[in-house]
Length: 194
Image (cartoon, rainbow, N blue to C red):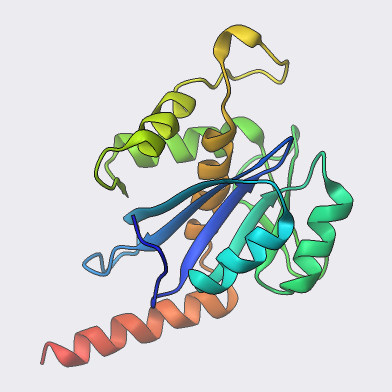
């Protein structure tokens, strides 16, 4: 995994007793921007550590769990205005993710978000690094989800699962500045091939 990145990346963060972070980077061989490399997994205690990740990995889009640390996540989003969005699952929403740039939040149906991130794995759109202890923990937690809201001790921890789902949401965002940067990168690549 990378210690830092010169290319812009996206991050997903699940909040709770600890902050679980997943960082993805576009696969520069993919002109459709559908494949992403998993470049960092981390467990942190303080939001200031996330600030450092924002710099080290040039994060241009982060989706973070809006609950239960609402006050701290809002402060984090305010420090990184326009780059950090708080996720709130909406049971009644269907279809595309709703990005609210004014309120720094994103809404999506929980089941649809989990389904989309799992489809990415099945379709080999997530490129994994070499196997190590953190990647194995990530894999275990990715299989611990249940499609229900109740906590169940038997399913195990799934913090990296949700962090990945948030990162996948961020990577899938084709609005605003991120869209322009992808367009310019693909144009530069196309012109370089002539």
